[in-house]
Length: 232
Image (cartoon, rainbow, N blue to C red; front, top):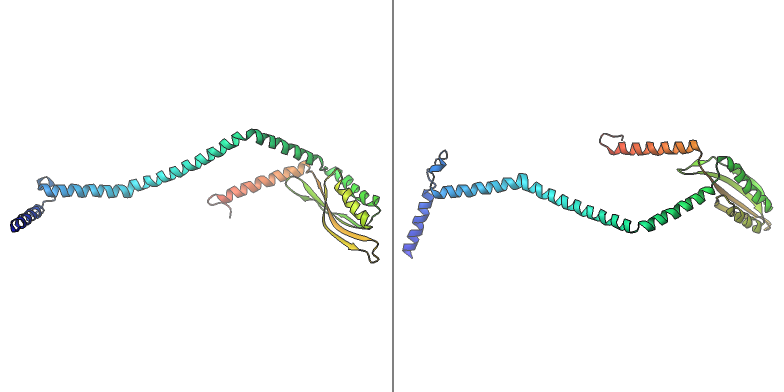
């Protein structure tokens, strides 16, 4: 045991002796142990620097590409499902277009509004109602149509008031009643109804052009606000 310990100690001393007095300018003269140790240290340094400045970024890029691949796969599956249902979607589109065309035919143009308002008035008169108020308001322009609110106040029998509302709903043009307020007469024989009749009409050429311009300006402003240095 003592002999083995002396041999091990001598080997360690010999190994340590190889690292003494090394000339850093002449590595080719170094003993074998320092050469091997320096080579291992250089390899480790290359691995650390490579990971820090090259491979770590490549792994991040790989993860980003994998996420992009998953996104593209989902988009592809969505497109495939849409293609599979293309015939049904076309049929739905055709039905929607038919419904829109039907609704558009129910909307009068600007010159036909007076006739529509006269029809509402005649519907009340035909039921024997007394108009205390019939006041059309200014048109409210929407993206695809215009709303014309009409403030109403009529008095008459309960049955006649109800029939008047049914007659207005049955008009060939679209008219809706909003904010109905019913008040019984003092003697209980009559009824007063206050409401806002909402009529609708199509936009004329100038109004449609104004709506398109407003939509284009809004899209332009939104795009400019989303860019660096855009409007705030």
